[in-house]
Image (cartoon, rainbow, N blue to C red; front, side, top):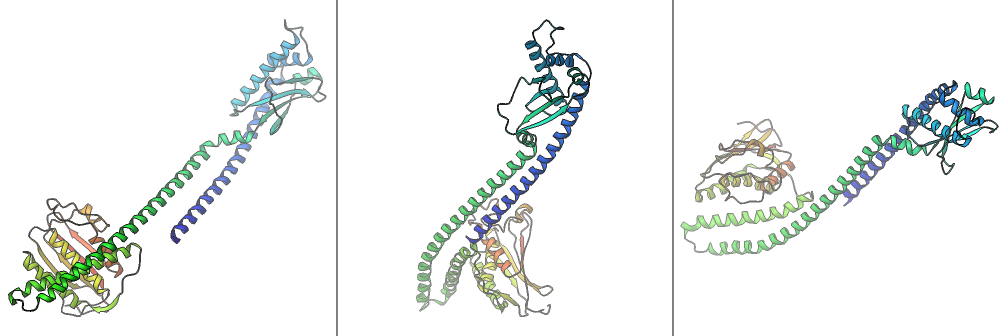
Length: 426
């Protein structure tokens, strides 16, 4: 719960930082857009000045409208003024578009004392947020009216226009942020759902395994009762039953502890021990079982003391798990276990003649719930937990698990764990 809150806090902080960075970039973009706009307006102003400085059809028409001279036209003054308004509007629009300015505008053409005046056919309804750019004309028109003539361009809500120009920058950035937020929420929900499933599953496993302990205890008690007066020839079978009951009980405990591993609880109690007696006992028990199941099993363990820092129960379970897999995935199992001392490390090597594993699956077999495709051995049952447990156990012992295998050529599993001190090589 604390980690989840921490992740949420980090994510919110990151998103806020992204918004701040985006805002700063937007401010810079707006400033650059304003600079470019002002530069373009300056170019437009010069072009308009030059075009209206000489006597031409447009300037003559505008001049006639200003001084109200109808002598050269078969039109009324009102019609001349209307025509000049539209022609001048189209002319300004052309000059703005040619310089990359495509936004609404109006204009006023007037003298200082307002005795001569001409306005745009389209006028903004409000004067709020209007930005004006006055252009003082030269040449023909000021000479005609004998006063300074000013053409004032007006633009409304330029910030919206600048933002529209920056859509190529802002929209992709906002979409990316939205996608990041969506993915984070989806991942958070998935993790929460997975945590809930694990909690429910562990509760079920805990109840089930505790229920299994009762019949296991009863079987163990029955084997002790059967020891009295048993035929010596059958003693071997009774010993095997007892060994398997103990083993089943150990597996039940292992399943319970797997639940604790899900929550990263420290269930390992590492102590310095001589692992040789434990390893020999594992081999002897598996050898006795092999005699009943047509399994060829051999082993060779170094004579030296094998001092390692280990949790005996978990390490024994991990090795037993590998031996179980070796006999499960072989039709006529031939299994060999041996130990080697290599550079202050103990190597436990288990080889078999089973179906083998292809290169692609060798990188996946230690993942939880993953099971190798078994070819014709679909009769092998399991849940893909064994090797993930082995990997976790060996990691806790600061060791390594190596797989060497090819399809149809068997598998060799090597467990490497550091020795407490440098044992003498055999």
